[in-house]
Image 1: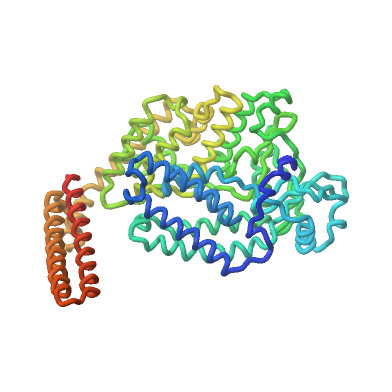
Image 2: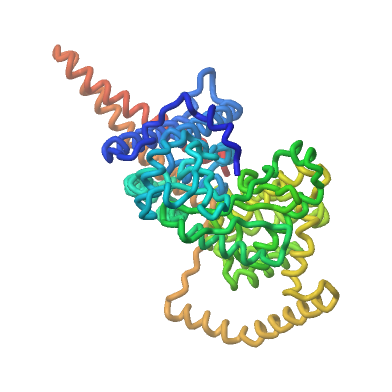
Length: 567
């Protein structure tokens, strides 16, 4: 648990408008839409060369985008809990947002002013049905930690057991309900946008965010997650999970065993306590790999604040509101992806990613396949154990941005957790290599749970031989089906000629340019006649129309010129 000392200076000087129990729907509507309209204006100006003082350069564009990312992060904090959590979720979606935005949203701190102890006391009484004095022998009115969703108070039961009481922020469900209704309208706008909506399921992303947010503020669900997590590690004495006191639990209140420890990123404190930092780095990686590959139930937010170390050297995990699950069928598909990566087979990797749901199939998969093949050729020039998770994630997301890759939440949570743990591991031990620790687990998956010997590769060859024979036997039937589709007209063959496209585009542009020219001539002649007859006001209006038509003609000619240079 975090030390209470930081509460004295965390945002104490700033009063947030959302930090109250009752919220105005109209005020929230204005605040949220004002932010998004400002954001849309900034995005529109980003692509306009004339909006850059002194001329457009890529360096200026990158600087502006970085400043926009910082502004988005700060505004999300100002808008409150809903947007803090949405921003943290978006920080995992580098397949949807530019790298600058993802980088800044990942820094979004979930530390905000604490609410009053009187409010916390009232919520405990409302949910548990008894006054605080009857439930606890003592409770510290100063919270150990405060976040956007709630805060934690240290307490003691009448049985003398030390516990922590997690209390939800007042009015949080009402705020979520208001904000999510407004965000649904914004998601619908982006879904229907001709540019930003293409190839992106914004409504699906909205539904996913809603599910995660509602699950995270249900403290009974968090308690069940903690129990499951503790059971999974019951045979490992180097992992500790706080026990849930269900008698003192409700949807807004959760009482847990008090397990103090040293924050895993406080390297000097660990050193002073005589703990083996190299061992801790390896244990942290093994604990997460155990969750991912063996349990199928993993901590989706393993940042350093949620992991501590006991005086005996055991890892202590906190905060089980955001957990991930891996379905049983994912294991086989993941194994297929790993074999494709090991063999540098871009075709196999693409097919497996489609099956995993990480890649949306499109009509022309050629560019995607080439990107994946480039990625394989670029990444796999070093042994597996020498790879860096952070480097792979950054390059993968850079390739994915703008492509039809749509990484599911589970995949992005796993990649973010890997990168976080790798950073913590290198802080504990500069020679730490996450891939080296992961190698036995990866081999276990690739051999389907068998020992990594030559028999596993013989089994794989046998599987591939069976697949080839099955394909060969089914080939005549597939050819016959294709011919039947051609005869019925169900199969269409699409041929695209770049040269024809260029000529058709130019003919269409010339026709439009002719229309603009005729309009310019007509408006100019009309303005001249009106001016000769002394109607100066009308002449100016018609002359302005001629100028606008001339401006449109110039823009059309510039676009045609750029299009020609592309081929």
